[in-house]
Image (tube, one colour):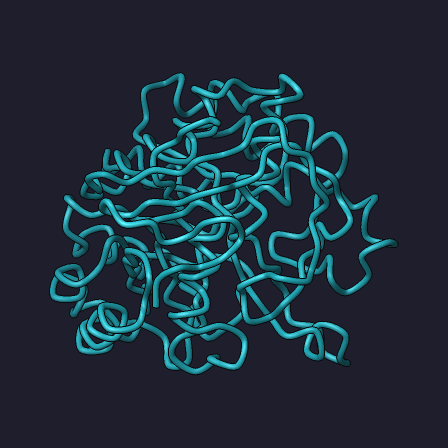
Length: 342
């Protein structure tokens, strides 16, 4: 049995408020525990979005009542509420800036708005970017000009990870995350997955996947799921919303990569616990750990998932390393496939 600290997912969509039919605080945090995550960071592109201090204060209070694990929330950058950023920061783990395609109303456009965000957001809190390709270069430039930490979400392309590597080599304060679906899936899987493979950023080419793995030990800082659940009816409908669930499959996939010698167990711990806590200055959780049976092989299935959407694009894949038990602050909260806390 392998023992890991309680994991941290820095990129989760809990769909609260406004999308509770896809996921809610209880089901999302249950899925987190089932996946070995005892801390999750939730995104602000909800309905309405988390752009006002009172909205984030309210969702923090709701999470205290309903969530089964620790949940921290990002505030959303909005050109209409830039003056409120200092107050918003008091209630948030960080600020999410959307510069490219996103599912929801949040998107920051224009250099003036970006400069104002960097000037008004407190330096002690992280700025996280959804920035692809050329937009990522803008984010790196802002990190250099203001010389303050910037985190890049769901990096998926060869040129992007190479840009971040170059920025790090020059001493710029940038960090990044990569998702399991961009590590284990590519555009070659789209004919098999159909609409279930629709996500943002879209799946990359085989050379993109290779580049991410080539940089897994020296450039990638975090493995983040970008857990973005939609119902099956929505995914196969006429207007497919982008996004897939990932909380319950991330550790099994990454642990399986450890058994295949694609990365070390110590590196896995750094990517899924140490670095996320350091980057976002998260409090430690006493007496909290995850037990994994390193020898147990099993097939990932849709049945039995705790996420409300009830499906995964990894259904049918065999992995080695099954989560047996999760302990949070000395109390067993997940054991043998079952949530044991309410």
